[in-house]
Amino acid sequence: MSDVLCLYYSRSGNTQNAMEEIASALGAELVRLDDGRDRSGWRGWLRAGMDAMRRQTPALQPYETERPLEEYSLVLLGTPVWAGRCAAPIRGFLKEQGRRLKRVGYVLTRAGEGKCEEVYAQMDRYTAEKHDLCVSLRPDSVGYVFWRDQFVQETLRYLERG
Image 1: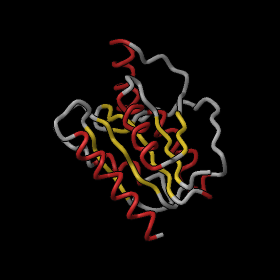
Image 2: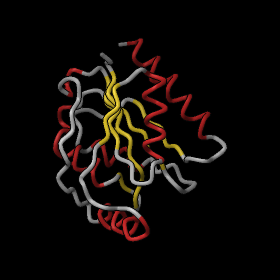
Image 3: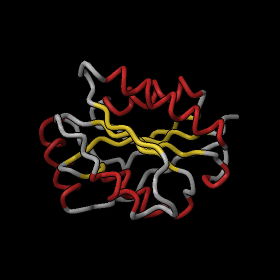
C-alpha cells in the first residue's frame, strides 16, 4: 500500500499522462476524479473554460481510495489549467475535501508559456495547509521531462525528510 496518493482530473489526457508517469515513479496510488460532464471537443473545451471562470463546482462522481485522505503522507493533485484556474472537478474536490489535506502538492498541466503559478494560491485557499510541492508542466515542450523528473526527485527527498 502506497503512502502517496495521486488524484487528478484530465479532459484531454495530458494531465492523466503526467500523473500516471509521476505515480509510477513514486509507486503511488492513482485515482481519477470526474464530475461526469462531457467536455469533449471544442464545445467541451469552451464549457471547461466557462466552468473555470465561473468557479463552478459540479458534484463529483464516486471515487475510491485505499484509505482515508488524512492517512496519506502526501496527496498530489493533478489539474489542467483552464482560463487561469484549476479544473472545475479539482476545485469541487478541494471545496469538499481540501481541509482534510495536511500535506499536499500540485501538478499543473498547461498549454501556454506562462507557468500559471497563481493557480497554486487559488488551490491553497481550500486546503488545511499551503502546498509543500508544485510543478507546472507543459506537455510536448522541450523541458517537460526535465521538470517532471525534477518534481519526482524533489518529492522523494520530501518524503525521506518525513
